[in-house]
Amino acid sequence: MEQNTALHYVCTHDEAWQLVKDHKQFWVSNCGCRERRGKCTRSRIDLCLDFKQTSSSGGSNTKVVTLAAVKDIFDEAKVKHLVTRPFRNTDNYQVVDGICFCCDDCCEYFMNPQEKCDKGEFIEKTDMDICTDCGLCVEVCYFAARRMKNETLSISRENCYGCGLCVDMCPETCIEMV
Image 1 (cartoon, rainbow, N blue to C red):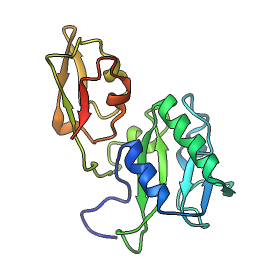
Image 2 (cartoon, one colour):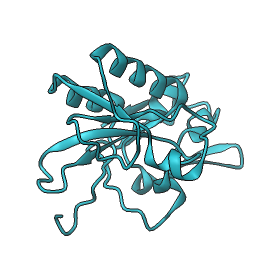
Image 3 (cartoon, rainbow, N blue to C red):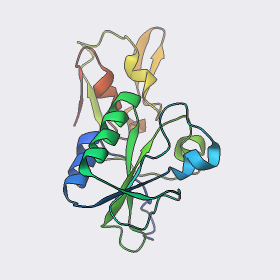
Image 4 (cartoon, helix red, strand yellow):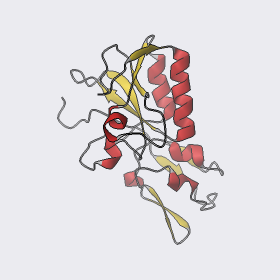
């Protein structure tokens, strides 16, 4: 393992889809977090995507899936507001072995502050002149970068991990990833 690099990192759904496009075979296994913690109230259990046959997710029930099934996982991730967290090969951190689809309901990363995850390449940029302070983006910001204070949106950009879920939620389209 590389000393200052975490096994997982955060990226937008679009960035994660680009990783998928680099592969021809796919396996899905049960999420190890969901298996250890019990039923997730947000999504189904079989959401850990691997780009190689041996699962790195820590979950059971690995099976081969088609690209169409992978697309279905991405569609569910968008609807259920799941963070895409690619995971690196433990022998070569330049290689991505797969993608976890995580939420704040069961993911050990969000439940355990000691769990390390690297930030993504992008960060949110909100046009506060357009923002109506509706707070919808706050509901999907599992990293506490977006909060409501006195009915006004407050943003801590240093907490932004670059998942892009806030972009999907904003009815004013005033958020972009830069």
